Amino acid sequence: MGQESRRAIRTKRIVPWGVDVDMAIEAHCYARGAHRTFLASRIIEFVNAGTGEVVDNIPAYLMEAYRQSPRGTIEAALDALHPQVTVLVAIARASGAMSPRERSCIRSFIETTENTGLLDDDVLKEALRYEEPNTRAFRAALNRAATLPDQQRAALLDAVDQLAAARKSKPDEITAATVAMARRQLEKSRSAGQ
Image: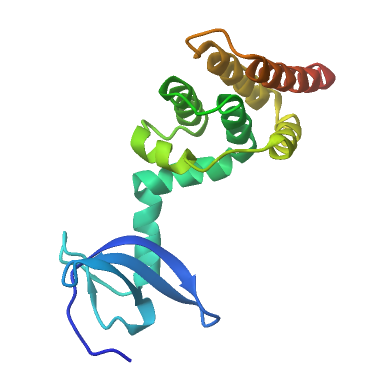
């Protein structure tokens, strides 16, 4: 066990730790000038430096702060809209990197669908950074999206069209084929539901 000390930290994330349901707080430690991990069960007193509030339930407090943060808002929206966002990201990345205009279309879809208010573009860019659905993931997401209620499918179809129109030049064959596949599957589901 380490020595007792007083530390000012900036929390980066919290993660479950071990089988005892402890939480690890990954943070920047100002005293050490480096990344450190702190176990919630070993913290004697936790004070919000901004408000002076002494926090009793550290993991619950940090989870709520995370949920209300820009990153937490985006993560919750991405979870709620997983199939739809996977379809849109697959289209945007069909022929390479996602452009800022394409990311803007995806951001607009999320903001409108989840009523999140304005999302931070840099945080969204980071959240989507490693999202590169392969063909199998795209098709699975498209199949799930095809079972959505009509209104949600229509919103996704609109977003697919906006994404296709966001390209400065004519879409290449791969992107055009991906858009066509998405439209066909989503429209087929729409006509089958009518």
